[in-house]
View 1 (cartoon, rainbow, N blue to C red):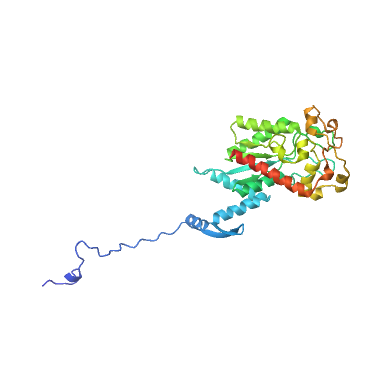
View 2: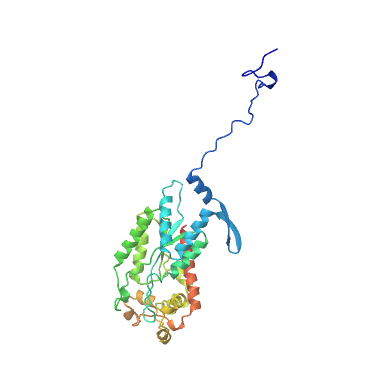
Length: 324
């Protein structure tokens, strides 16, 4: 008979050979979560939201970015700055890929029957295109409008400030170079200022950026096919400076920017400015527009302006998507 006691348990209660006394194993010690892990968990939590009358799901991080982008598109400078900072941080990641691009805007001249628009107000073309691109999931950043460019055709009018075409080209190329360094995908130019010197400067910028292997500059030149054919009969005729085409856009966007009494009194000027330019004319007066308008501003309507803005937005969207 064997003795049992301290350190010598009875045979029937001893561990059997080859069988663990703790089949479940030692309990794992729970590690404390790092702050970064907690933040990541919260950001990636699926959350329901409503869009287009439907309930959808997305992470909280995606929803926060959507809100930031929408604020930037509405012109909030702080939101746009935050987007730039996020892009700079993302570009440091080896697997980061940019889907962002820039849209620039130039302000058209509306002499005679309209007051000069401030740089921040002439973004109808840009915003229309940006809205369409954003609806497709593209992330768009709108740069401030450039209020000065080559405008030699209007030199005879007091208050016209024109810079050289070389300066315009150099500015666009420098902007494109900086955006390339920051990892942006492309730069789109939204332009309805049809001064021939200005158009030459923009097309030259496109070519120089390509030669320097910078990001693509997308410039749908409205004076070339197929773009101009979509903008109505007056635009296609070439008699479209401060006439029905431009006046309709201003009435739709900013009716307070139109002097209605003067507009309604203007007699239609059917002379084609584009044909006058081809014939070598270099000023509005010599082209047949002593008051700097061509077309029929009195026939302008807000409905046509809304249609034209939508058409301009579609042109910008199509040009950008063709590059992407």
